[in-house]
Length: 400
Image (cartoon, rainbow, N blue to C red; front, side, top):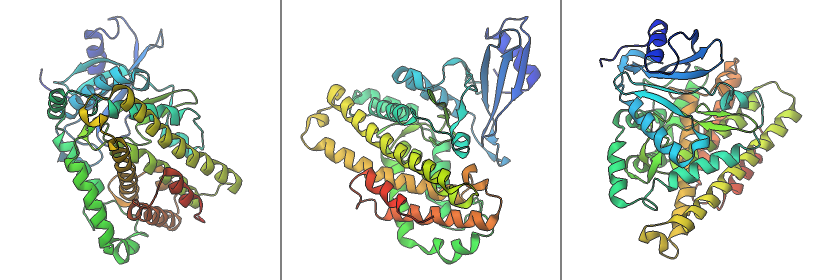
């Protein structure tokens, strides 16, 4: 089947032809995609309220336009990753009802009854089960797709299957390279530009540490990672958490996903210093955010170790002292990757609404400098921290 871009008239005929809805169903179709890459539609049957989501990859980067072509094969990586994740943590990812690799589309469970975590956090909503859920998702998906558990031959086959060249290149450039110099792709607050030119882009030691982390991203094929796990790829409520959009999935460094979650939470934490909100509310929400980071990371470590003790198959899992070595490296890399994510979200191509929602550019700049300075402090001192509480205590002591 030849690829074509889905329009509303074509969508109705297609979903009926593949048996998602009956031929006489009355459908309402709404385009809801606000991401950087894809088309996303919610399709609802008017009489029954049955609904699904159809996601289709475009042959270019949507946020930029046709001047940046991109392979539609990324949908295969997303569908393949969701299928593996659904076997490991079925309650934490959307169900797939249909996939068509030729048309680069997936039809999946509609999660619109949940809130996108980024916007939920901007509204100061709390999610008491998030730390429990995200720690389970990461501990299980990262362990059970690693050499600690998998047969060596099967792991290598999986690694080859997830050679996600184009999207990895986007990450390599936009996270680890472009933010450290005046790259054309950067999206810069004009009030921030003098600080970048006079201060940030002159930090050669910081750029060296980012380069070390880039090399880990390039070379450490530890686990099947989501690859783009942030607060914009998580749906939440007080009782549910669903992780979606793993089109950047590949076999890479396990700590990358773990760190991205922490980095995005810290961006929200700092963003409140640029907003006119009652200080008591800010203090309460910030306390919740730091407790979430502590609970999430500590639970992740505990669950990962339980998986190791229960299901570790490789000889290396039986060697005394190796688990401690592995988890210590995981912690250092988690902090490093969290820092790189914080930096790229300040003046790289894609930002967080948490900060860009601050309309006063001078206030936004002040928040952005605070994010950059905290990210630098964490990255440069990641070998000095003994545990996650020391990191969150450092954040708490700041006077923003």
